[in-house]
Image (cartoon, rainbow, N blue to C red):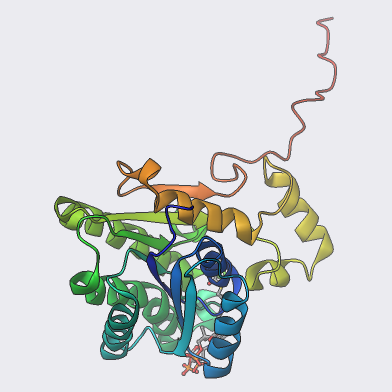
Length: 269
Ligand code: HXC
C-alpha cells in the first residue's frame, strides 16, 4: 500500500493542467484529494476525473474558490479538513498568466497576476496552518523558471514567482520547528499545458526551445506529480525550503550545442 493512502491533499488550481495531474497522482495512491479552481463546471469535471482514478479509500471533491479571497480559501480549507481530516499535503498551484510587455501592461494587469500567484500562495499557506497535520505536513508551491530568469513579456510572472519562492522558504524556516516542510517545484515545459500550447504556435521557436533542454523533450504532468509525491513522502523528510527543478536539466544550462558529437578539433597549422 502506498504511504500516501488515506492522506488529505488540498490543491489550489487543481482543476486543470499540472495541478490536476498532481491530484490524480495522489488519488491513484489512495489519498483523499480536494481541488479548488475558479470555474465551478471545471471543478465538477475535475472531481469526476479524479474519482475515476481513485484507489482504496481514496476520494475527491472539487469546488469553486478564488485564491485571491482569503476568507474563501480559509473556508475551503476548513471544509476539507472537516470532511477528510487534517491536511497532510497542500499544493499551492493556482496561477494566471498572459504574455505582454511592461509597456502593454496596466497596473491592474500586473496586480492581477501577482494577486493570483503570490497572494494566492500566501492565502493558501497562511490560512492552512491551523488545519495542517503537525508534525508531518508537506507544503509545495508550484513555481516557474521566471522566478530565476528575467523573461521578456513576463514581468508580472517573474515578480510573482520570485516572491512565491521566497515566501515558501520563509514558511520552511518559520514552520519547520512544528514539523511542517515547505518546498518549491519549478517545472520546465510540460506537455499539454497552457504555456506549452502558446509556445508551440510558432514551430521554429518551439523546436529551438526543445533543443535547449538537456533532456531533449518536454516533461509530462506525471513527472511533476511524481516530484510532488516524493517531496511529500518519508524519503524527503529532511528536505525543506528547497527548489526542485523538474525541467530536464534546463535550469542547469542550455544544451543546444551538440557536445556528444563535436566537430573534429582543428589542427594547429
Ligand atoms: C495585457 C491583459 C492581458 C493581455 C489581461 N490583461 N490579459 N493585459 N495583455 N494579454 C489585463 C486586463 O486588461 C485587466 O487590466 C487585467 O489584466 C485583469 O484582467 P481580467 O481579465 O479582468 O482578469 P481575470 O478575469 O481575473 O483573469 C486573470 C488572467 C487571465 C490571468 C488575466 O489570463 C486568466 O484567468 N487566465 C486563466 C488562467 C491562466 O492564465 N492559466 C495559465 C497558467 S500557466 P485592466 O487595466 O484592463 O483592468 C502559468 C505558468 C507560469 O501561469 C509560467 C509559465 C508561462
